[in-house]
Each structure stands twice: as C-alpha cells, then as structure tokens.
Amino acid sequence: MRWARIEALCGEALERPLEARAAFVREASGGDAALCEDVLSLLAELEADPDFLEAPLARLDAAPPTDGPLPSRIGRWRPVRRLGAGGMGEVFLAEPLEGEGEPVALKVLRAGITSTELRRRFAQEARILGSLRHPNIAALLETTETADGQPCVVLEYVAGVPITTHADLRRLDIPARLALWLAACDAVAEAHRSLVVHRDIKPANILVTVDGTVKLLDFGIGKILDASVMTGPAIDTATSDRLLTLDYAAPEQLRGDVVTTATDVHALGVLLHELLTGLHPFRREGATPGEVERAILERIPDLPSAVVLA
Image (cartoon, rainbow, N blue to C red; front, side, top):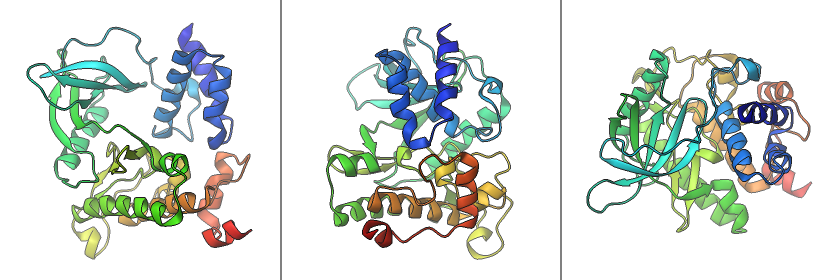
C-alpha cells in the first residue's frame, strides 16, 4: 500500500513542471516526512533512468526504497544512515568498523538485482572515478561488495547542497557565482583530460560544502572516450538508451547522436545561465517535456544579460 502511494504521488509530480515538483510533493505528502523523502528520491532516480521520457511509471522495473534495518557491515565499513534510496540502489553514510576515520558514502546496487548491464555500469563508474584525481571531484576510495555479493563503491562523503541552492541561500553576487561555476568547470576539464565525459552535469551533481568547496559527483552514466575523440572523429558513444536529465541534455543526447566532451560543455552553459538569471534557458513555466526538448533542439536561448534586464 505504501509503495502504491509513493508511485501515485510520483506519477502526479511528473505531470508538473520540473521546478514545481518538489513543492507539490511536500504539500501532497501531508506532513509525512518519510513519504515525502521516498517520493523525492524516486523522482531523482527517474531523472536518470534510461526510459524516463518514454516509459510510463507502471513499467519501470523498480522496487520501493527499503525501510528495513541497516546492514551491519559492508566490507570494512559500518553503515550508520541511509542517504538515499531508489529502485536500483541505495546510498549509505558509513564509518570504519575499526579505528577512526572520515565518514564515507557507500553506493550499493540493490539486493536482488542481477542485471549484467547494471553491474557493468557500476564497474564502469568505478573505473572512471579511479582514473580521476582532482580537489573538485568526489573521490573513489575503494570498491567492495555486500555479504550477498552485490557490488559497492566507496566514495568520499560530500556534505553539501546543489550549487544553485548554495548560491541562492547565500545570496551570492555575480563574481561569487562565477567562481563556483569556474570550479565546476575545472573539475569537468580534468575529467575531459582523462578522456571521460560525465553526461549528467546538473545542480544535483555539483554540491557545495559549508566551506564553499565545489564537488562534482556521480559518474554513474559517464563515458570513457577513445583518444581519437579529442583529435579526430568521435567513437560511437550514442545515447540511444536515453541516459540523461532532460533540462541539461545536449541536442546530440536528445537525437541519440554521438556524445563528446561538448555534451558536458552544453550542460555547463545551461548551469551558468541558471546561476546568473535564476531561470532555465529552455524551460518555460508549464512547459511539457516535449516542448522543452523541442526548445533545446531548435531555439537559441536569450543571453543572460537580456534576461536580467527584461
């Protein structure tokens, strides 16, 4: 019954503009904080789902976020709190079983999932993160597995908020917002130097800590590029599986064409527009997903300066 309620609220939220969904969920949850958190978690999961734009909610191969007890251990770590959960996996805040140490984030594939493709993506994320070392990229610390053999990546724990939220809460001026954005650009540039394209640059994947440090997260749908992409024809990294977040997707992602580092540059441009104006360059109030997609494919957005002065 609870999952049916989560599913119903999520379906209603998806019918609303992206910027209105969180407020709708909070109101519709009627003060049930756990229900609100579960619905928002599933919404975030669906944004990155391969069938997000095509499949009705009822067809999604997902189970409700678990409310069960925490695992007693995963590898050499003790989970102390769930940070998030969705149809495909869970993320735990954890501490070392022995001795002292910094907390970490454990990203675990949900028990019972045996999909070769999902396991391949987990392994790919580990390979990608293992190749990157940068102060503005959340680091991979190690890989391990649960007692029943589910893969787990151990990540640097980042206690922060999305970059746009941080800028708005702190009422940052334009130079300070640009400084945050440039730090995010540095992180993305480091990935590109390692021939990695992120493919899902968005505020939720760029957190800012309390001391103002920018951290790029979640290379779960990242792509390792062949060196020829940088100097010649790109290899076939088409996105026919629609692994994207619509509002930050580049035209080539929507068309299912080859993805290159330019895909991330497009998303950074969208992010910059939001940081400077508070508005999305392609989404208008009440726009449907189809209308947003057409705008990305066909329309040249207004300059931020023109938006601010309008």
